[in-house]
Amino acid sequence: MSRSNRDERPDLTRWLPTSAKEVKLRGWSELDIILFSGDAYVDHPSFANAVIGRTLEAAGYRVAIVPQPNWRDDLRDFKKLGRPRLFFGVSPGNMDSMVNHYTAAKRRRSDDAYTPDRRADMRPDYPSIVYTEILRDLYPETPIILGGIEASLRRLTHYDYWQDKLLPGAPVLTKADIVIYGMGERSVCDIASLLDQGASIDRIKELPQIAFLEPSEGLQSSDDDIVLFSHEECLQDKRLYASNFRHIEEQSNSLHAKRILQKVGANTIVVNPPYPLLSTEELDKIYALPYTRLPHPRYKGKEIPAYEMIKHSITLHRGCFGGCAFCTISAHQGKFISSRSKESVVEEAKRITKMDDFKGYISDLGGPSANMYQMKGFKPQICEQCLRPSCIFPKVCPNLNANHQPLIELYKEVDGIEGLKKSFVSSGVRYDLLLHDHKAPDLKEAARAYTEELVANHVSGRLKIAPEHTSDRVLKVIRKPSVSQFQEFKRNFDRINAKYGLKQQLIPYFISSHPGCHEEDMAELALLTKSMHFQLEQVQDFTPTPMTVATVIYHSGYHPYTGEIVYTAHTKEEKERQRQFFFWYKPEARTSIARSLRQMGRSDLIPKLLAPTHKSRQDKRLKDKSSKKGYRRR
Image (cartoon, rainbow, N blue to C red):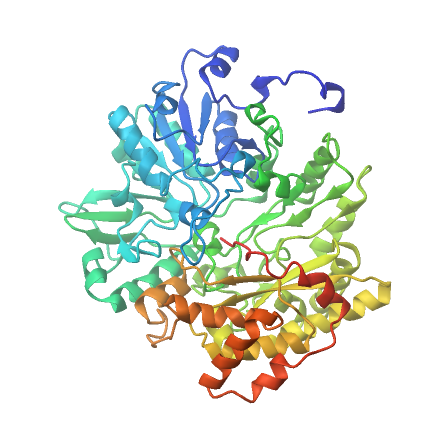
């Protein structure tokens, strides 16, 4: 909204309609597609309901969004716009609803960042199930297309931490006709096009990047298909469940994936291979759509925390080739990178500078990992055969062109925009890419130059990185580099700060109770981070989420790639004993920590860890914040 229109009543036709009144304002007598979302409607390219809605609108369809419908009353929100001509689309939101609703200790959260004024009661648990069941009951003949991260990561047999059991895939659990997995712009447009031509659901089942349920009898399979152990077999033997996961992850990270089949009772879940990577031109078009970049006017006077965090941020690329064991990004977006053009990013930055509340600062130039922009293989044919879950673990792939120069040039181009004072990088940085001993001198120099450019010009006082742990044995399970690299990066960070006379902080993220982590590992973590003058602020307990290596290990006890038994803390007491070591500096934790150290036979660590120590300036600044609740990750 321009500054000249600041005090005028908003033009509701600038947003996709959310009510019958707004549909009428557009002069429409019928809707083609109605989207139901578990999130508030924020017309911004970081919100899935806006991206899907705008993409369908650009394809010529009349689209409306019903954000956070009330599922507990007379269901008027599900009825108010009637029946669409083509289909209902359902998305539970940007986060898995159970991660959104519950802590790692399974305590109900008191707030929801994707809801106006943080209200925690605006979506049900498992909206994928609840919304599709309501729509199927009300409109039994209308196709229902389900997407979003919750359904995407639950497309096959998965462990549900909150119910503590294996559940069948989303095509079984929900009433959807089709489940879209991954980023759904292509899928949803192709589905709309086929339905618009009068095609049947059977014809839609030929499309890529979808999952659906078919009767096993009569299902045609080929030698190229990957046939998983059935859901029932997984229930009987956890090792078979673990074995399945390797195939699922490898196909999620393949440029030429195969079709996956899994029997559930008398039916079979079919997962078709994904579409090819989005080209730069295709990605640019998505981010050039006419987003207002604002919450819908229906939320006037209310704050949506997730929007406040990202409203002046820019996404540079999709995908992540880190392959962290607890992370779901590659399962949803894939490991191969799709990047926007420099021109597209600069144009979005210019639009941000014209926003009413812009104060001169872009909060983030980032992505799933901040410094993977435009990175890909030197030889594409090698990538086409690769099934590795990570391009940088256990070591950086020699075929990876990890050139940071395009990113440096992009930063400088954005910072030259009139009206922009500074751009920051808030997304996580993979420092192992910066510290790798690249054989090509230009890559090595670009990594060094990027590190200096980042620290000197793009840190808003605090740079967040994620070493996750200090035990190399635990880090091997997590798929992260040795702690020695974290220490080296800190030395570089401190050196650059000193060079430019800066007093910036390095904020490391750490995790407790991750598979492979023992209580003694946490004691060593506390000792090492204390020696580096950290009082930890950004910490979390491991939360098992569907479709990750770590979750498979948590439930089954086996590593899906090696078959080895891996210890994981399960009980509340085990987890609390690990977590307490984050807070060695708190007086109330000293007695319990000392007791734990004696019980594990490490009394030698008591004086080293609990002896009074001189507090650095960073310690003092972080003290009041260190007890805040841990951060959330997808």
